[in-house]
View 1 (cartoon, rainbow, N blue to C red):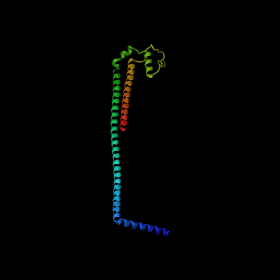
View 2: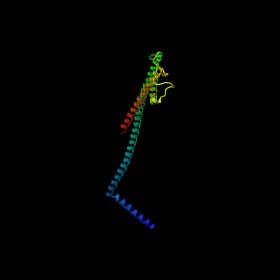
View 3: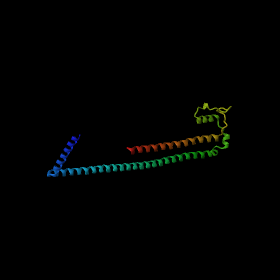
View 4: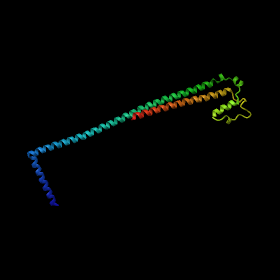
Length: 204
């Protein structure tokens, strides 16, 4: 083992000596200078490369953070706009519903003016009309509506004209109220659809 180490050390010493001799001569000096220049160039280039990578990565990260912030800001603006539109739609629907209910109440208050007590006495309501009204309200066939015992369709029912008028006005009022609610839901659906389409278009 010591012989091998001695041989290696001897070979290494000769190589170092030959290299020293070579680099101290005129051609070797030039070669040494050239190698030093190449080494310096490589070292500088490598540092510049690493710096360029670091700067590029930092710039990309900064841009990513900026894009995230802009996206978040845009998302907040879109949500605020959507909330405002929904609030507008809801207010419009509520206003229409309230108006329908108010008109219904106003008309009902005027029933005694147009259908007086004297009218109730002079024009009894036939049971056939009451049967049709109840069938329509319940959504069934008139045959499924029973009359009070001893009464037929052509007989007067114990229902006053003013009461029947009130029921009819209330039923139409419910229709107009439901109509306002449906219109509000349709506006809401259109508002949400427009918001979804806008988000989809901006995300492409």
